[in-house]
Amino acid sequence: MGLDTPDDAGVFRLNSNTALIQTLDFLTPITDDPYEFGQIAAANSLSDVYAMGGKPLTVMNIVCFPSCDLDEDILAQTLKGGQDKINESGAILVGGHSVDDAEFKYGLSVTGIVHPEKVLTNCRAQVGDDIILTKPIGTGIMSTAIKAKLAGKKNIQESVAVMSMLNRSAARVMKDFDVHACTDVTGFGLGGHILEMAKGSLKHVTLYSDKVPLLEDVMMFASMGMVPAGAHKNRAFFKDLIQVEPTMDRALLDLMFDPQTSGGLLISLKKQDAEPCVAQMEKKGINARIIGEVIRDSTKGFLDII
Image 1 (cartoon, rainbow, N blue to C red):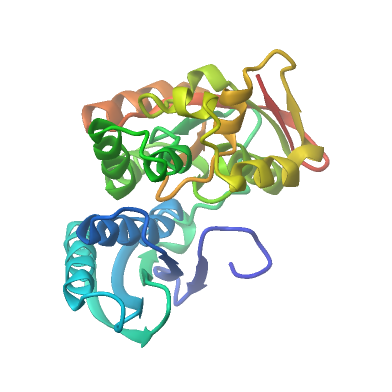
Image 2: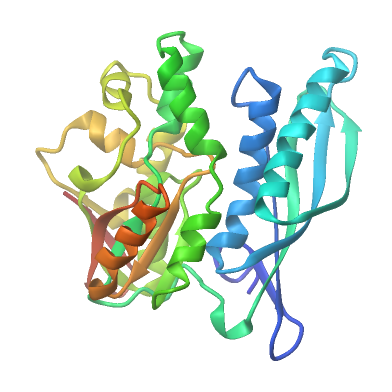
């Protein structure tokens, strides 16, 4: 798997038992705390390996740092946050590369492993499947509210906790079930990534907006207009393959396309497995919900949001 599919990572078969998963991602600071930024950036980079059904093995740091403008302790704390999250994942840091740059950026190049017959993609959803989401959404809108100094301490803490949470536990639970397709929710927003799954699988999917878990107070901030430009761009980009319930609340619709950082996994699996899977995740402290279903085949892929 490589450039010919819109999947989360590249996969290269080594032999009949092992395939490499390779991915790379980095971010500009999304929080004022450098340690938290390091954790979020690392969790975001590691997520693609989990979305492909794999286990992260080795990582390398990617750093762009304005050494003349920022104190070196900011870099040290960022790297410590990343290292702690790498340790939590069970992967090993083996090196990296840094350059002096005008804008601070940090992330990871990650190599994972998976059995070639157990690779998960975002293009094998089947008619009758339910779709599970494993994290609440709204981090893009919440980040906008934080920058506008409207979000409270509790809002900030919840947002950071969600973004820095590894998808490791959710990935472990889903391995006990017959998962047909998986991806993680990032820049395209929830609606965009479900549509990517629908297009890749040539399926018509329904997203039930009232079932989607949300960050606390994020609907209020969305109603106030704290919506990043990326949310409007996402909706416009996918509009020809989306049907929206006419009476749907505008703020809720904005949330469906809100760009996420280090979002949850989207998992398509047999309907009879969905509730047991969610129950197992809830026991692990994961705020998982069934948020949609695969309705029928489609020549291009289509999404209803109701």
